[in-house]
Image (tube, rainbow, N blue to C red; front, side, top):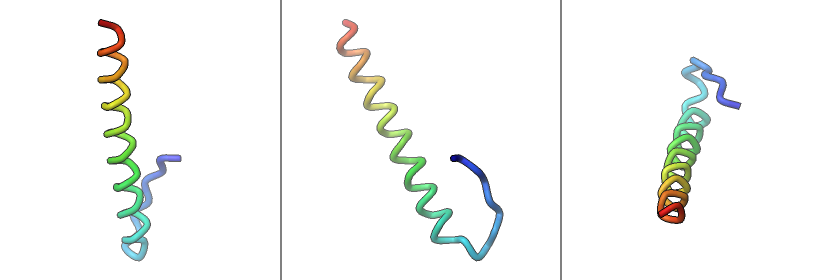
Amino acid sequence: MCTQQNQPSDAPISLTDRFLNAAAVILAALCGLAINSLMI
């Protein structure tokens, strides 16, 4: 899924990929915080 493509013509696609990656990181962090709060 996470394949890096160095193509200047795919700027919008790489932009959406960055947005999805950022959203995935934020969701992972929130899930980690939720699990940590439940483990207490």
